Length: 216
Length: 312
Picture: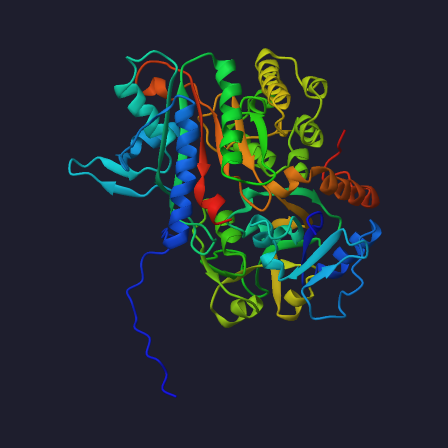
């Protein structure tokens, strides 16, 4: 048990591709989806998955309850203790954009108030540009906020843009892009470096990963 | 059955630290173990004030944004101490410079920092620290890191390892750029974020440094740059690492270690132990701190995070 690597896996939109990526490097969880248990051994017995809410993955990792984890970069933007994690690699899936959108009939300016699930990121963005925009935090259905008058616009993640279109919103600014990332607990990565690094290298190989820019 | 009425008690502030019964006994016992170790090493115990002028910390750490602040009667700003290295250096400069160097001290006490609520952290926590002023720099570097490892072993921690770096190594690889970009790069290195580093001009060298991983060969690291500052840092780092290995200590050489605390000027280290997600000990060399309060005297020290050790 002591030598098992614990990996936090995010429920939701990144789960399927994460499981597929791990399967390609030989880590498979036969019981996944077949049981309500939230800790699952892999076939080799070398790895154990903790299935948690996507937003909780960094918390499990920073406290060392999981050694490594997979999470969207968007979740890390909002995570207060991001500086205490290692971000070992960017994966080649989970691509999405954080955008500012307004009702199709509105002008792009002025924006006095936005609604978002990403208050920290939105506030950083506007403040670092000297813009005074009030940020209202919502837990979901953000599109509705701009149509119902809570805010002039929304800051939200888009993958295909279909939801925006259905709610008659248009993108006026792209704020950031996000992909899935492999993160690690600092102590776990340092003390179990060779095991974790081997997994990173295998994942890089199968993805042909070369980072955002060319690497030497 | 009648429901037992619960008596409401006034809550005490969140993020404070209470030690009762067995918990408290273990805390005192741990401190006693460290006290014995430091006394045996020739250090004397000192006790330091909780209040200090905020400017003392701000000068040492621009951008310190987690202080508890108060107004003094004369309008000056007071802070609860967020750490003990600076207050100790100040007391050394004020009251102990007539002694023969090196002077060794240790202390135990609470430190106070504003933290985000509900992150599982407390706003006050106990540290036990050791500092040495003066002496032969290279010799004290080695002896201090060894003492740190021995302290953790005394406390009965399993699988103790020391992660070792040098605070001047990464800065020596950065080209002179603007301040904001520099801070972003340092943050990316702290996170070992190769994606972010790859996007910076000249970032390939830093990506390579990260890809050396832990405990790379000295020649691999040396191949990255040839200026004097960089070579000195590599020399120091591997010198201490080889000494510790010779003493049978397991060392994780982390040439990319970039401490958040900005006053370090050489060897830096973190104690890690199995079952503890966060470092249980942090320390390093700081040769420019004492000089701010008195004569220029080099120094190195570390603090043991008792909260992390006793409460996981």
